[in-house]
Amino acid sequence: MGKIFDFFEKDHREIDSLFLDLRFKALAEYRDTFEEYDQRLERHIVWEETILFPALAEKNPMFKEGPIRVMLIEHKEIRQEKAAIIQALKKADLAGAKTHEKALASVLSHHNAKEEQVLYPACDRFLGDKDIESVFLKIGT
Ligand SMILES: [Fe+2]
Ligand SMILES: [Fe+2]
Image (tube, rainbow, N blue to C red; front, side, top):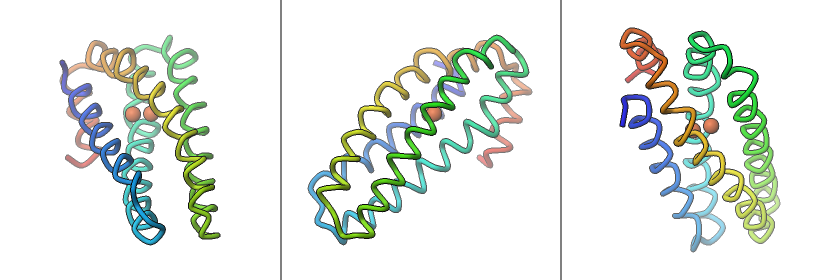
């Protein structure tokens, strides 16, 4: 579809597949997989918040108060659910972790769909080749 869409959508799918791996894990393995999942998801969110969304906001300020603001609120919810899972795992409470895992899945599915349908295509439409190059340079690819 576009360079930004392709890269970020692929990252969503890779992070999703780690998430799906959690399903049948016992506590010790769940902890390891969740740690990897958390690192990948956090890296993705930081790329969006510090590199991608500011680049889009600069090109098209209308996005800043609308879609980007909503994405940032949802990132907060995602981080709250992640933190709750980490807390549950610290107490060896796998059932508690699973409850927050469901809540996280629900926030993420809507969130990722909006990014893939609105935000990423807008980035590909409004950012020029140089801006896109600079996004990938900052991401380090
Ligand atoms: Fe996001
Ligand atoms: Fe995303």
